[in-house]
Every structure is written in structure tokens, then in C-alpha cells.
Image 1 (tube, rainbow, N blue to C red):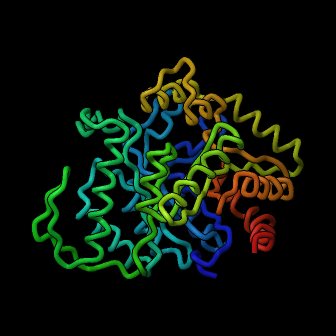
Image 2: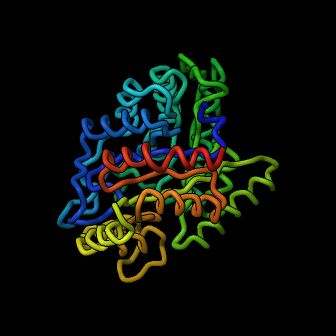
Length: 355
């Protein structure tokens, strides 16, 4: 079954940056190496996950663990991942503020050719201010909505470069004169596009310009609210949108053992790194209501399920149904062990249940 035909889709978020998605001194080592990411991607493809995705980071958060201080470049790494996988969609991340749309159009067309038509692009309009400030790339004249206006023009040009042989464009941010880009992508109608913006402005951009959104709330109720808002916006624009969320999965031989592991990771919270993350996001460290900020204080940066494989399978079902999702992107403390368990004891049941 191809990704596009799957009723519910399941993917993996690669640990492209050190420490992964748990800000703790007590987690298994994730070193941001290509070797480690390659092994994880091959296993994810072998067990039948629908997509493999990596984020892009330019600056970490400090603390004792220097969380996310080391990271690979997403598109380059995913080109390597494309070579060693066969079936899963390969989704790379690009920040609109840093790369010209004509350059990105050619990069993703190249990734699409390497992967045999499996390429996807996660579009990020800009969030962690300090990442861009360090290289003089943060546009002080653009507010939140302005960055989405920039992203709209940027995305329009990427898609136009994939469609046309010659592009002329005179916009607010870009001026193209007889711009060309060959080869075109091999996928039809084009590479898969996603965005993780979850404000109403972000969702309007996502609905109008991409195929899917990734969301996350402080609670299940909050995630459901955002999911419904995405679909409401899609209805207003007479279209549809896929809605995905993330979930960190902690397995144990018993539920109690898994919860004990979760507690151990929380005991190791690197509060210095958590504070650094909030500062990078432009938040005060004394109690921001941000989703990421609240999750950081809990050590786990995403929704988390813990327990035996059977318990985790049930909790993932509840997450998908309760939040009205089209699928989940999975994260693990130990990706190799976690994916092996997922493939043997959880994923087959989930796919059968949602078939």
C-alpha cells in the first residue's frame, strides 16, 4: 500500500540533532550522527512506516547536555537516507528565511529523483529567533503574519519552478527574471508539502499551500481544538488537509516499568537546556504558555505514551481518534529498540485497526 492510499499514516521523526526530543541527562545517547540516523531510517522503512522526516536546526540550547547543539543538515542527510530506503516518503525540512526558492526547488527535485518520487518538504517560516539572529537572517521588519506572507510567496515560487520551464515573477519579496530549473520532480503531481504552523494564520497558509499540517497542544483537548480548526479552515477554502501529531513512545515489559523509565528521564531534566530552548523561541523562562515551553518543563517535548506494547497501541489509537488525526509521527528514547518493538508488536495492529 502506498503512502497516499494509507487510511492512517505512521512515520518516524529522526534524531537529526543530539538528545532527540527528551531534554534529559538520563536518556540513551542520541549523537546526531549520520550512522545512527541511517540505521534508524533503514529499520523504519523495513517495518513499514509510511514516512521518515527530519527537522533542521542551526543552534542548540546549551545546558549540561548542549541539547540540539550538534545537528546534521536536513536535505543533505535525507538524500543519503533516500538511497538506503525503498518505500517510505522522505521528508526534509527547509527554512524559508534562509534559502532562495529557486535553490530549494532544485534541491527537492534532486531529492525526488534520488528517492524515486518519494520526496517531501517541511516548510518552516521561522520560529527560533536566535538561530537566525546569529547569521543576521532574522527579518525585524516582519512579524509573525509577515513571515507567513513571505512563506506564501516563497512556496508559490517553489511550486511554480517545479511546473514551468521559465518563470517571471515580480513580488513583494522576490524578483525572478526568466528563471529556469531543470530537472523537474518525478513525483506526481509534485513532492509532498507539509507545515507545522498551528496558529490560525499558520493553518491558513498550510491549508492553501501544502498537503498536511503537524500540530500539538498542551493537552489532548488543545490538540483536538487545533485539529478541528485546521479542518474548519480547509472547509472555508473548499479543500481538505491531512492533520498529524507527534508522540514519544516509551515501552516497558509492564506499564509500571515504563512509567518508572519516564520518571527516570524526568529526574534528569536539563533545566539549563530547557531554559535555552525557551529563550531561543523568544519566550520568557519564568512561565510562558507556549506548547514547547510547557513540554520542556516536563522533560518530554511532545505528547508521550508509555507502557507495554499493548498499552501503547491502545493509547496511540486513543490519540488518533480522540484528536481526530490522520496519523502520528513517532519518537523514541532508544530508536532502534523502540522501532523493533513497534514493528513487531504495535504497528501491525494499528494498521489493521485503521484499515
